[in-house]
Amino acid sequence: MQSLSVALGACVAAGTSLIAIFALHPLAPRLGLIDHPDDRRKLHQRAIPPIGGLSIAAGLLAAYLATLPSSEQTGIALLGAALLVVVGGLDDRFNLDYQLRFLAQTGAALILVLGAGIEVTGLGNLLGFGTIDLGAFSVPFSVIAVVGLINAFNMIDGIDGLSGGLALIALISLCIVGAAGATGSVFPLPIVCAALLPYLACNLGIGRLRQKKIFLGDAGSMLLGYLVGWALISATQPAAAAAGQTAAASNLAPVIVLWLVAIPLLDVFNVMSWRMLRKRSPFKADRSHLHHMLTRVLGHPRIALVVILTLASLFAAGALMAWQLGAPEPVLFYAALLVFAGYVLMQSHVPRVYSGRYRRRLQRRLALQTVL
Image 1: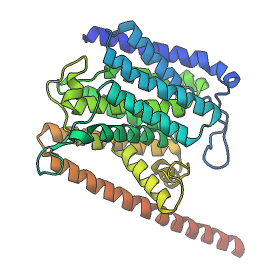
Image 2: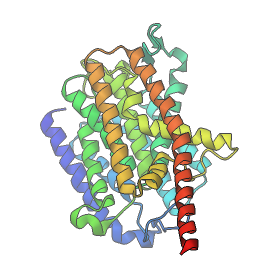
Image 3: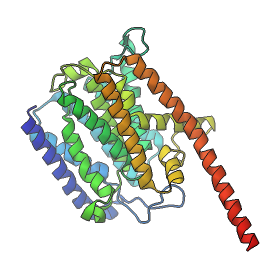
């Protein structure tokens, strides 16, 4: 696709997304799309409409209809995105059972993999013993990978700007590499990034958009996980990239995926493992996520957001730079494992250290009050 068409599509996506926010914001209470605060996890001060996902979907659909040439593959893949938006919107309204959400996630992944042919066929020279070809395991692995990413972005959506910011970092990283002729994508990534921007501006309360505060909602967080998964498979798999509208000169090594979405993956695996070890449902929400821990330690969710997004940017930039400089794939993989081990240790020790310091400060305060 030519640069002018992509630029036009980005403008249409951003404009439509912003219009959708302004249109849906006053309608949200009548539609029942309102996220009310509570005493456990939802600590916002007022009711907020979770219409971010609907606005992003509207922007993507408008851009596709207005600027993109007809593509059966892209249309099929977008059906999977539409399924997630519909089910996610219903969940935002009626609080559906997690089993229905999981069924929709699996259905969307099957549409992307079997319907659109976007699948992981190989993992590259991941372990250092030669190229790993998935063969007959390609389809189940691809479905599990897409569902995993959908859940990762859904579960990490706990503070303003986090899920959208992490998705934007991954997509912009692919845009940068794509601009150098290293990767192609079925759906132009600048258009996806443009559709995200109005939501992020409203969610973070930038300028006059503070009055249009919105949340991403399950419709949005699941949509972002799906889109990021779609983009990453297209960027790292020769067959998926070749089937897209823009041919790839070469592909990213599959191991780069671990670095571009490192924080959502680390968080979802750590949290779900922690819950299952304690015989809890892995899908039952709590305050054990990275952003919750950093908010408690650092004192404010906006500081936690800056720290996490900075770390995600460093991971992405470092991995892409190492790949461009010719770092072996096994080195990048084993380095990712070390980062994961360090993350698990941090998650297990920092809360304990923080709790100990908090208890000591409280004891000193009580002792001082007793003396006075």
